[in-house]
Image 1 (cartoon, one colour):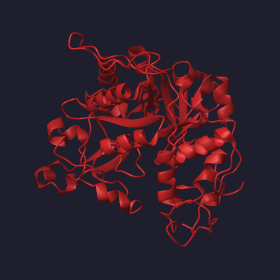
Image 2 (tube, rainbow, N blue to C red):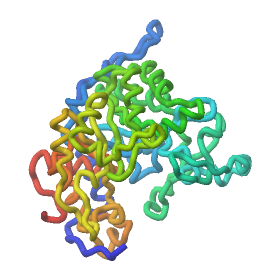
Image 3 (cartoon, rainbow, N blue to C red):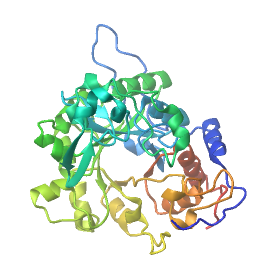
Image 4 (spheres, rainbow, N blue to C red):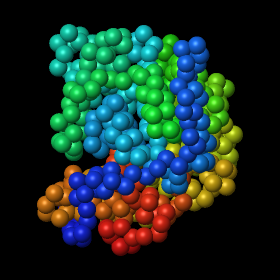
Length: 403
């Protein structure tokens, strides 16, 4: 990693960004949820509603919750994201041995829980090949829900985010059922729907284990009244077939995630489909995706590629081409830290915002990405994203690099 250049002295620090967003939280801007809770005589929950077309533009999606400030996929990260005003909060779903869906970015929980320190589970450590990658560790499908609930979550990247380790051990792994109950309760309390962005992880792999994700997810969505066309959820997957399956089970809007241009979705690899992501972002591929999905979630590099120096180049035609086919564009993931930013937006003030893990000119990066016309963005720091989205909407300059 090359040493970052010094940024402007007026650039806000971590506490400034967090405090400003909490004091000026952005409203959800969506249709109100049904305010009345279900009575004991009616076991069905009220159905929260709100078309995705009414979400603020650009939409700020809290990536794994407010994962820049709390260990990812914990109730603490989800609650903080909601309190900051995030428009949508993301969950990644993997199954337990006994078929429950829990919120983890990966089924490998070695780095996100204290399982490695739990002697009673030492014998569960194993090596597996998942979507072509060989991994050694502990995996959710080898634990019952009761066993997983004895573990505690911790920060995934402590070297980059040492402040987050303060919260190690504070929360258990949440089930998706718990998250749905929480979201509906908060929606009633706040008189507006709490939006969720829900990813099925490694669906082909789990289907072959007899732990198919789609049917289990559909049952939970129906149980909590979030299966309709105007339900306040997005469903997402890197495997197009998973979203095609979901389209047959529920009417909630669907997003296909897209990785690097030379990669192939794992269901394509297994099924012998020769197409790559580069094929899917061509007009013909986008038209095919639009036949069963309402949006795409490309990596940011598919929106604006980086040059040989790691600096942002010129935007591609992806946003324009996707919009022509009626597809939303929700790219991932923008983070505040220098190490995760394009090279031309890294800064080092020699103080709090110093080094690879100090904050860079993320507002400048947001301006570049928002200028392409994207409909939303995944971010680990929803407070920063909200301020940048507000600046984009009102046209005012915020502190940061002048483009």
